[in-house]
View 1 (tube, helix red, strand yellow):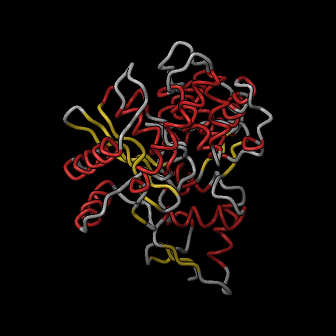
View 2 (tube, helix red, strand yellow; view 1 turned 45 degrees about the vertical axis):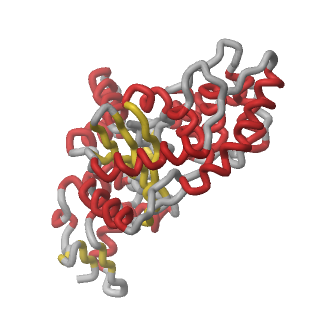
Length: 355
């Protein structure tokens, strides 16, 4: 035998679970590769589980973690498909086979929404946002990848409300382009400005005053950027264990980038109607409160991202909530605050895993 999954030889495709076979059918050439791998005497393939098998076949055949479903217009990892369940996969398969019944279209839509899957049509529509904000020509926002387009989609889906009536989305976008080093940072700074712009009689004055406040606040957040390296997709229980072990050494878990740390800290620390001025003590208090919450509230559940490699975990209790995100092999804090303000001020995860 030349193909092994979970230390068990696979001599026939039907020896895989029916769910794995369903997910495999969405990989172009996947079933043919499986048949070849079973029969070839020249190669030996060994996988820890069926998820790893699916990811390896997709990546090996096409050099991308996401399969393409042309009838639905969906890029999605076979590992994510594996998590949808048999009924969900059957609906997607029927649509891909050309079934155009309205009842099936509604069922497919439910599968997409319930699992946080975003189509290329939705991503394309969101790509028009920079033009609407007057920053379409910004070099930073050219040639966007999947994660970046998804972040724009989520900015459209959950737009932040302006803390000041005079602040416009175009003004916030101009500020964000000037500050950001990456499209994801553009989204963070856009939310930050909409929610926390400093006072001023004109847009230029508000942007200048906010920049001054930002420059004083950013250095207070250098200690809020640590994460936990995790090589595999963990369960909520494994995340809880990793958190306990990590924090037992006196370390604290922070945000994946300083722009998100800024946006979250300012949104949660500022009193509405009060001039933006978050002190180092306030930043430290916010992060310390997050650590206490994480230590006493285990992850409730996890949702796999559309890319099949990222996961978002929700934690709730005592009127507060937090979100942890595993992205690029690092577990970090995505949001923390009271349940009402965290919901209003939290950007969704940039990996197809909205809360």
